[in-house]
Image (cartoon, one colour):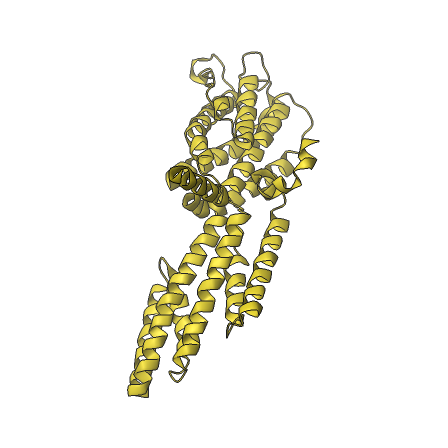
Length: 353
């Protein structure tokens, strides 16, 4: 009953935002576009189309907050630099058209050079905005200023819309990880007990999520204080689990070692399910319990291939649990941008009182 009393919570709860990410993305693009259209029509700003174009560029193809913020900041920086370069081009055109064209050629060459490295979007936008603002150098200065203003306002509207409905890469990343860990636990349990299982289909889904997580790493590092090394370690552990499960599915039919009484099957399944639950519901205390050490196959009289696979899986799961124990509190400590803004406003009010 409480859930239906506050249906608007679906727009701020990370789980629902990620579950309906495409719908939320379409909604915020539409709202930002309508806001920009209202600003243009209400204020009568000249060249208002550039504001709407900027909103679509900033929001359109980048659903996550880290990417939107980076793209908006780079667009604003590139717009400022390009606008200044365009104004310089207009001034130089009054002195000599050839001097103006030489200046534009120099800026375009520098933009092309830096567009191939870090901050390439900023460099590219600098060259594009130079042409938009300066034209061929014979554009009126007031039109150049209006175009620059439209681009900056459009970037701010795009960032505001992304902050209000924050589709964060770190939330998508941890939910995909939780799904993979739960899938691994169920798959391993069925393989070990020799129950019917569509191993290929499950492993394909596991691998598909892993690939999607790889594409989110850059945005996750921007939205949180996590390092690439920590995230890469989690990715490697998942890849190892995928490989071990694939190999277990091939050899489980020929040996009972996966399900024998001394096997740590239950402990591994429990650790994977608890880690998945901790990630989904922000409960880092579930990661405190260490996984019992698996028996060393080298000390067995007749160790089978499955004994080695189980021991390797136990070590991998324990390594992953340790990484998640350090990572999850830092993920929880990174609030959505809109919530962070509200907290700052409340703190400022308390200080004034």
